[in-house]
Amino acid sequence: MRKILARWLWRALALASLVLAVLGVLLPILPTVPFLLLAAWAAGKGWPALEAWLLNHAHFGPGIRRWRESGAVPRRAKWLATGMMTLSATLLALSPAPLPVKIAVPAVMAAVAIWLWRRPEA
Image (cartoon, rainbow, N blue to C red):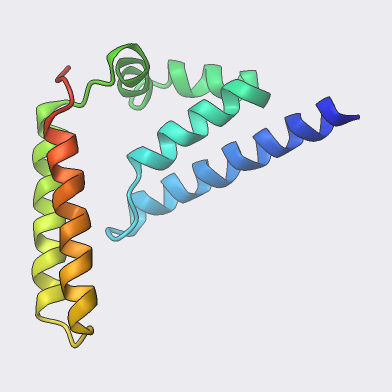
C-alpha cells in the first residue's frame, strides 16, 4: 500500500511540475526549466513512461539529459535567464513594492545568476 501511495505522490509531483512548466512558457514571471527538470526527476521516481517521454522529447530531452549528465546549462539559456532577471529587477525597482522586497528579490536573483554562470556549458 505504501509503494502505491508513494508512486501516486511522485506522479502528482511530476504532473504538477509539468503543468507549472507549461504555464511558465506562457507566463514570463514563472520559470519553465526548473519545473521541467523537477517533473523529469519526479517522473523517474514514479512514472517511468513520462520520464522516457520527457527524455526523448525533441525539444526538451537534450537539455534534460545534459543537466542529468553534467549539470550543464547552454550559454544562450544563461544569457536569457540573466536578461530576464535584470528586466524583472528593473521593473521591481520601478514598482511601488516595499523597500525590503526591492532589495531582497534582486539579491536572490543575483545569487541565482552567479550560481547559473558557474554551471558548465553544453
